[in-house]
Image 1 (cartoon, rainbow, N blue to C red):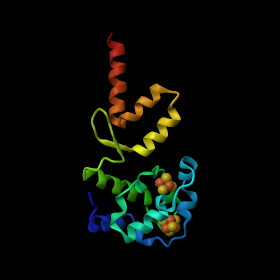
Image 2: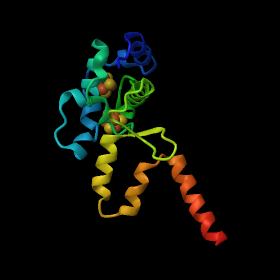
Image 3: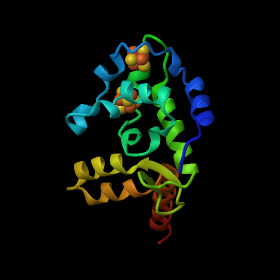
Length: 157
Ligand code: SF4
Ligand code: SF4
């Protein structure tokens, strides 16, 4: 599975990555280290942007799957770079090409909805609440359907 340079360049343009002037503010305010401890440079927004501008082979490995898509980096960027949109677009491309190595799919509709790294992080946090943890295996729309069908059963029995 390979992302073509043209596909990468389109995403780079849409998300304004070429305006990055490497100030490092995005990495300084990114909350990843609060959740994962020391985060190596290649997994930080600045590290990923640097690689994306030079190398279309960015998607091999797990670097693009750590971002929690909180969008703090976009709000703090003085140059208008939309890193969260970039990472989501890149993940969608990887999933579309059939690589599920780091993407969790809903157990009901089988759509991709969450990186497995985020799923594991949340599962570890919810370990003591098995009912809540179960919901991490369904996408938001299937979760709603499950909740409504459970509710419908309750009021019809
Ligand atoms: S905050 Fe913006 S300009 Fe600064 S390194 Fe991050 S993406 Fe580049
Ligand atoms: S969107 Fe991702 S890279 Fe940006 S601050 Fe949030 S976790 Fe960090």
